[in-house]
Figure 1 (cartoon, one colour):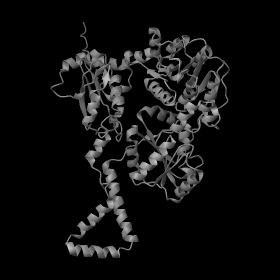
Figure 2 (cartoon, one colour; figure 1 turned 180 degrees about the horizontal axis):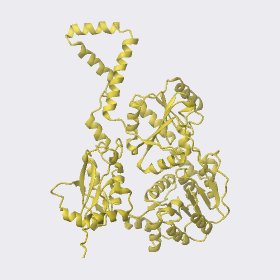
Figure 3 (tube, helix red, strand yellow; figure 1 turned 90 degrees about the vertical axis):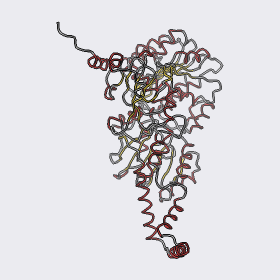
Figure 4 (cartoon, helix red, strand yellow; figure 1 turned 60 degrees about the horizontal axis):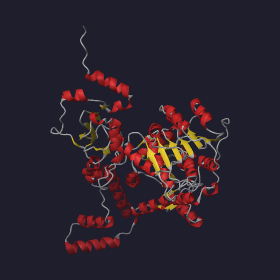
Length: 602
């Protein structure tokens, strides 16, 4: 292996079209709005297309998935229905995320199949696709090793292996499994190893298995202006527009720029905000230069207050009146985040930066905080009460401005005439006019309906908790209710299975999942009291280990476990939210101390 290079990757200077990718891949990138490659993508794509092994040293979120997926997908033989690409990832979440990205990138590769495999999922679910044939597998080391031992995952036709976040696999104790898998690779193969750090053991793995690899190192700029207040909101994609609308209603801003990931998203979001009464417009790479200049001039002059843009379209944009930057879509790397929020807080002025983070993107949030060395504080979305207060104040302000700046003589005469003809109280006439001016949009939000909406009750399918409150330990006023799940210790259920099933399938944030206790025949879990019926319907049909949760409210009738049974049959779980951070052995030790009587001294 060649010595580690100190040469840093330069800023991207080309488009994806110049890197040698096939038309099928370029077509997908155009559709999803990817315009220019990041630094790591530009270098890795070229090396991998040339058939070289690579070591990519870069932080999480620098665009590594596209850096290895795009060129290696181009090497797949679609006529050969065998595993040709294997990607090892340290966690189930990352494996699923990478598999979904590959599925997107391969949209125009007819007949292509990718399969995520990981522990905790039934083998049957994974065996059927493997038997039919898949071209790419993304999996955790342990489950991949199991399938290789069983003979259900064959590597005879493998062309490339990717180790994603190798140092994380080392930290989690998977390095021996990784080396075992690499020993089973065919002699002719290509390897791409990605790691944020390079511990000695990772270097030895590279020296043993990689063939004269090319080194790609990415260093991220970390400076953020101290005058910028940084906050984040944690919630799922289906609730982002509502969350943004609430923020726009209560935040006092001069001009705002909202960053999204794709060109189509700029126009879609601009149209939706305009329909809600906000002065918004979009700029992206497809907009003609003269139109772009016109929009920017209107933005500078205050005729447009909100600009929705992609990273590329916003390059060189310097508008003094920008007070807020909102990352509607999380950036692909920390450096992009720094560039984005740098549009505000310039020349010593204060600025506000708000980052929208989906539950699956929390790792990227931590990476941004670590790389920038700046904490990003969680924010609460404004409640219905706060929004209503703001709307009332705005309504009163409009009345004041109209009284001060408009000639009302003609309308005063009309109202006096109307009052004499109909003998109606003046205040009722004024209220009727105010209602006419308000239109179909209600002035005040209904508090109860507002809270129901926070749980996504209107969706009818996946139910989403809108993260308005902070974690339960910081927010004890959040009312909770205890529910009973029809799986227990006899089903070999674990707290993580319950937590994952509820958080993933019903898209309820783990912040709103309270105490989990597992007994012999059932499990109890604390969930928010105001969950609508639709949420429970979703959860009742969720399966763990091929069995339905059949969740229902815990009552005296269905709570069959006595105090003795609870102490005898308790097999672990989160008896308190603070126990979640404890290692398993410590939780078991504390449990044993709690439930085991001290033996009398002889």
